Image (cartoon, rainbow, N blue to C red; front, side, top):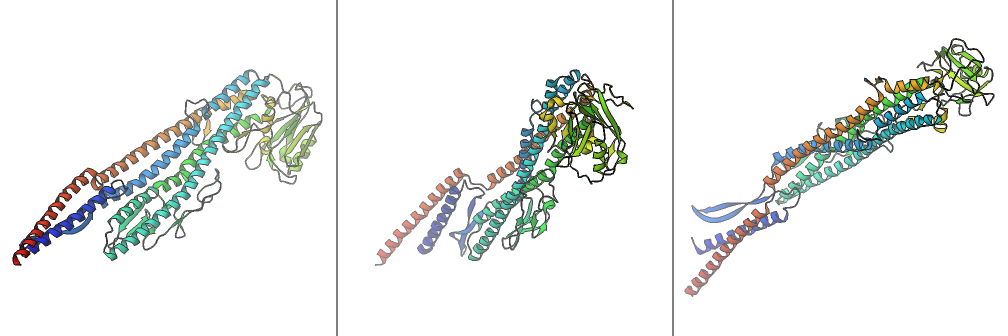
Length: 572
């Protein structure tokens, strides 16, 4: 080997070592950078005429593992969905209270049962009546509060859907920009490895929001699709679009109430699966509405069953005025069968007059008002709001109703139910159940007994009595007997206890699932980090090795320089 070739070999060694130090230094400086993969400078030996002629750089390679990265992307979708569902169900459980709490739904049912039992033994007690009304208000308020909590969570999920769509669109833009930068770098002959690391990290971020599929083309462009095959990134970005509802209530559903999530103008809401977005959609449209339905079943049953008993009740003394809550006009059609009994009684419960009104003979609301108004000592009218008013002409007298066999309208409602008079609860569902304003304003007017239902009555007979507990006992029976609640037959206390326990169990199961999915994701990330991440100690040791190689190459160059100097001196 000549001195010139030796100098060339040593110089190449110096340059390759410098490149190696640069790559290793970059590894160390990016050791904490998320998504960064360890880079390695490959080298090749140089052989000239069968003799070793030093070393040359073969380029920088990455330790990236595309198969492991694909597994992480897939698992990110599963973990993203599981985590948001667990988070929301935990919020729902916290709002509901534990099964041992003294303020949860089951405790409120038990309280009303207890107060009704006490009222049945002391029907004349105004203070006990007030406790019953208070317990009923607590129960109605708890149902309403839980319904409100569910709708607030649905509203939050609705807003989270909008945020997730925004985050997805941002990730799609980033991936598209990285594709363009990689294409440019390829055309310029520069490294694309760090750009590829950033793209892989963005794919993982995107998959947390949405279940995706993707592939990389021969010119290193990554195209992304939804799990159903709709393009998100190809030669351009295809953004998702969603307009969140301003207000969410129990009646809102998808489709019909909520806007669709669209892609290229097409509704893809039902095609979306996995990721946080899939979780938010499932919560808003399926999981939380199921909880609302459970509450609505209980609330609707309470309203109908309690009112069906209470509408036959009469307070002692009987009220001088009875006001309905439903609105009508006099010309409204009226269709009914059967009779309703309307009686006028004094403060001692003695009958002054009565009539069993034949409802089948009446064709309009005005006919109903006229029939009631014709009863001796009683006036009837429609209020300015269209509510039925039945009043005693003598304020010292009271009015009592008995539904008998009345059946009004297509639903065959009782007379009181149809007009909204003598109601314990108002509303139709958990969102609006409430104790009637009459009882809230005057708990002492709570009816515990009922009007005599004998075939005929005689003026002067005692038709209501202070010690009558028949209605309070019937209300107690309603609260403690099994009834049809959705697809089950159960008592209200047991049904509410099962609901509270089920929500708690669902939350626990969701958290277990989320923990398992997150653990799988964390294990995959750990495996990838161990395989592709930077070990600072190893890199520093490698840099030290390269520094020694650099020093050796520099020493060889110094020696060759001395030999060149000596050769030139000899020639001279």
